[in-house]
Length: 185
Image 1 (cartoon, rainbow, N blue to C red):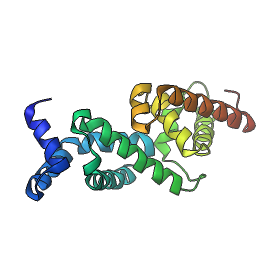
Image 2 (tube, rainbow, N blue to C red):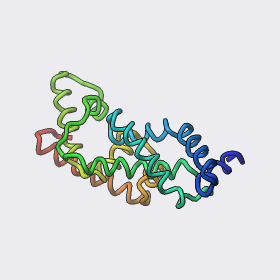
Image 3 (cartoon, rainbow, N blue to C red):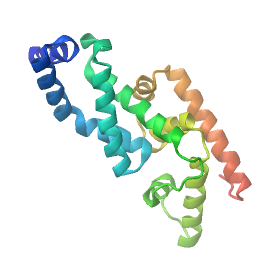
């Protein structure tokens, strides 16, 4: 990490008001897109992801005294972003509809009858919404987004083994839900 970045991170943590403002603004501009992209992977809604990105940076600002510059900003920001997205998911109704493109990404490429494939995608997306937010985030990031277990573990603040366990449980619940809907996974 260049010395400028270290100075920027130190200013965020304990700088003068002027240095803090400049450091925070610079970090926002440098990391806004990455935080937005991470949140979008979780919530699947661009407008919500924009709102949660702002919320994430507000939380970063409020928690700046606990920031450890030696550990790096990206992982810390991703963890705060994950918690903001998790809070949002918890506040939503469990049966809320997901965006249409979410179900398209979940299912395998269409084979055979398009109407049947669309129905399978819809039922799979519905089964996904029935998962608890903790399981849904882990499954979305690992299975759908194909993020490394290590990155997901860091963002959720849990071990890699716990991520694997959450994904296993999510897939087991999805399989059971789909079978109850008449689909054999």
